[in-house]
Image (cartoon, rainbow, N blue to C red; front, side, top):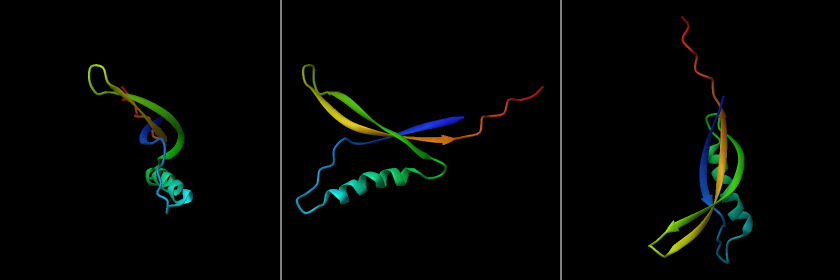
Length: 81
């Protein structure tokens, strides 16, 4: 049986003038590396849009990436009679 977990991450990466794109991309993949422990494996990335209701008439859209991880686990044994 497989179980899944989702880890949200920013949709875009903002860098300063002095920072390189390579360093920013490495940070992106550091999250994946950090989560791939104890049997968890990277499965996929999916974009997610969230609308935050600020007031009755004001809303703000936010965009994220969702890193999806999968882990194989043993199915629980059923009791025998």
